[in-house]
Structure formats: structure tokens, C-alpha cells
Picture 1 (cartoon, rainbow, N blue to C red):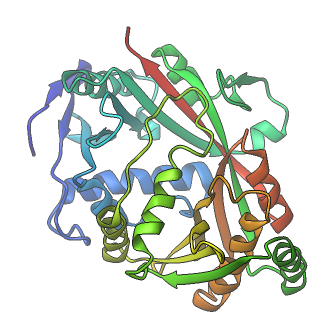
Picture 2: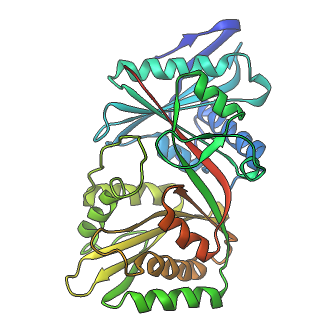
Picture 3: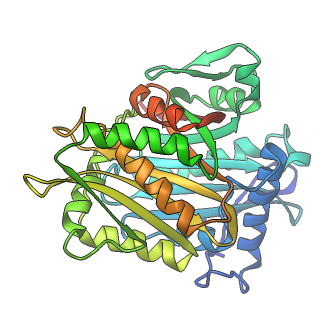
Length: 369
């Protein structure tokens, strides 16, 4: 364990813990306790682990890297683990921001422990010169579908249940709802007939473009162009009023992401569209899969570069990658994705493919001064 230990009321302590160097975390009981809190919470909230990182993924992620420092803090009440908090500190871009997350085990909620954990995270972030704190909270779609009263996003579109515990906690601590993302799920495999119809129309519209793809590692001759597209993901997708700076991607950053995925048991499949006349990469989409959780595929980035929009490339690369995924991961039964509510174009593509809303994610921000 390291520094940043605080004491709170009724014997509560919050202490930063060591992140293990090995993906199995066998030598790190504190980190295993942290991971187990997340597993229990996912089961409580969703009834499954579809949205929960595997232990190997969690270890590799929380080790951090040269682009982001990541901290894990464990809360104990008289020695018993009752909750946790995490802090992420961007190191390359957005260096005045910090990501915060708080989780208290169900039997220990409504006793002020979450507030104590959050206070520590904000204090640590402020000490590092951070003046804007970001937080995310995902929950099932059922209350929204049932028509409960919503808190509307301040600068984006959509809303979250006003009376949800997460909403009340965020508002009480000075956070504003900036954006809402729709979490959607697609039954898998996709009907070959419906996929064929969509793919045929996309091919008709995308004359002058070629489709190419790779698994887990981008070919060396494409990695520079792919990095440029990856950089656009932080500037060309809706971010409402969150005010983030664009990320700078190069070949080294792509290789770092690929290596982290592979080391944590994650396979990826990329489908890209190339403009025949110029040779430019014009669009791409990424799917990831974990052998430890074979039923679920995650839809990661999808982007069509400015100047190449209006040619059906989003649908072209998505249908192409779904076809490849059915060959690569035949045991999968669903594909899961997230889109900002205001990103109506990408949501329309997903709806046409058969994705259905299954959850939402509120994106909260607190700015000092």
C-alpha cells in the first residue's frame, strides 16, 4: 500500500492500494477485493457480468501507462472492505481534468462513506492541478422506458432518472449532467439475410472505396494512417459541453493499446474503408472479444472521417466487421455498444442493424471556480 490514507467517521479508512504486475493478481489480495466489489455490483445492477471487466483486464488497465495515471483506493470499516474509489489523471492531453468513480457495497450505503471517498479523490486531483472532474454512471434502461421523471442533460441530449441514487449523489456533490449515452445490445449472430440487405445498399453507396481488415494488430504499412483516424475519435464525436481536448495518436500509441488488449486476453477485429483514388483510410470500426467472457462482443470505436461522409461507410465497415466476428467468435450471443444520444446518425445505423436500448450512461462533470 502507498500513501493517501485518510480516516473518516466510525472507523472508516480509505487507502490507495498497489496494482499487481501480473494479470492473475494472485499476489494482490487488496486488488482482488477491489475487483470483487465491481463483480458484485455488476451482478446486483445488471444480473450478469456483460459490462464488467475481467480480472486480467482490470489489472492491465489500472496499471496505467504513459498517457494516463490510474489509482485505486480501497475503503475499509474497522478492517472490513466496504467500498472503493478510482482516480484517473490524463498525462498527455486534458491535463486539467481527472476521472473519478465511487462504489460502496450495498450493505454499507447511505452512511456517508461514498462522500468520504469522493472527497479524497477530489482532494488528490486538486493537488495535481486538476480543476475539472468527470464521472460516469451506467444503469439499466427500464426506469427510462417506464417514463419516470428525468433530469435532462445540461449541454447534450437525453436524461437520466431524477430520483436515481446515482443522480441524487452526483447533484448533492456539485456535479452537472453534461451528456447521456445510450447503451444498446444486438442479438448475435445477425441474420444473414438482413445483414446482406444492409451491406448491399452500403456497397452501392460506397463506390470508389475498398474494404480491408485485420485482427489484433494493425499492419505496419497502415498503422500511421490508422493512428490519425484514432485521433479524430476524440474530436469528431459529440462531447456535449464536456470541453475535452483532442487526443494525439501515433503508431506507438496504437501499439500500446494493442499490446494491452492482448496481454489482458482481449482480441480485436478492425474493419476499415480505404478511398481508392487517394489511398486514404476513410473509416474504421473496432470489435473486441474476451475468451474469458465469450458470450459478449464489445463494439468499440466507429468513425467516418470528415470529407468521406455521406457514402454509407459507417454501415459498410460495421456490416463487414459483424460478418468477420461471426467467423472469429462463434460462441458470442450479443454485441454491446454505447452512443451519445445526440449522435443520431450512428444510432440510426445501429437501429437498422438491430441494436436495441438496454441501458444508459450519465456523464457528469464538476468544474472548480
